[in-house]
Image 1 (cartoon, rainbow, N blue to C red):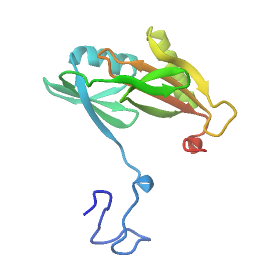
Image 2: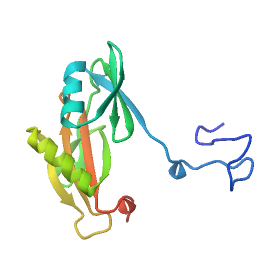
Image 3: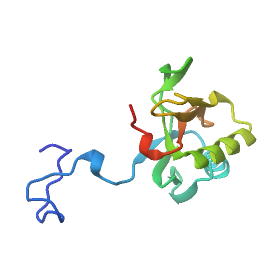
Length: 162
């Protein structure tokens, strides 16, 4: 059975038995777990700089609310990245993760990062100005070298505009 197929015994309203929900039609949260080398430093950065709310924790991991999504930071060696991605004229680390935000939220977070003295891989800037998919973007590393991208859109309805 495909992992992308969600079978139900009793189909939801408007669906027939045997139908499945497409992933792009589901509304859900993501969970991302990755390594950091110091949980207290992670707390200072993710709570203090990014303003994430701390969730559960143990001596070896801590959860954060990352704009409604769950980040689980575990003690260990951070994943290896290489600057093989291209954002405009900037080589960016792959893999990376991040958020797509409404533009006012993106601006507030960009100002917060600038105020914290963040060293940007890609400084806050607009891309595709005046085109479908116009977006503001920035890239930075957390204190452990984990790359994060933040994108801002005037309308989240244009995230996939072509």
